[in-house]
Image (tube, rainbow, N blue to C red; front, side, top):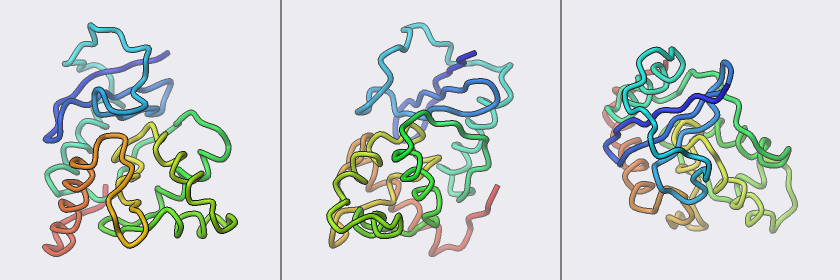
Length: 171
């Protein structure tokens, strides 16, 4: 059964989705590739869903600079290729950046596959939780974030600042 709830964040309202025992979506409301089957009356204060409550708590801790790795059961829906890319995203350490080309190389893909990787990265339904914001263009350029480049910059800056301070913990 699909369950969903909205939550406030420092970067705008987010939508969380879960099915069965796994988180299937974490989106900034209105971002690119936002689900089109969202009812207008989603309860903002769901309190009886353990998984959605834990996702909220972990996202709050991330935004507060107290969490670097999420420990939630995840079940994003996508093609086999997208799943491979999303698994590679999850392996990018907190505070680090890789280019689309480097990510393609890590996946053992042919040179020139960076564009296909970028398309899969952009379809990541678990923004922040699966850290697609850590992927940058060649030479470090901020490109291609479904939540908007300003949010991407803020997320990268948050992680860089916390790494310098050494105050981040794992869940």
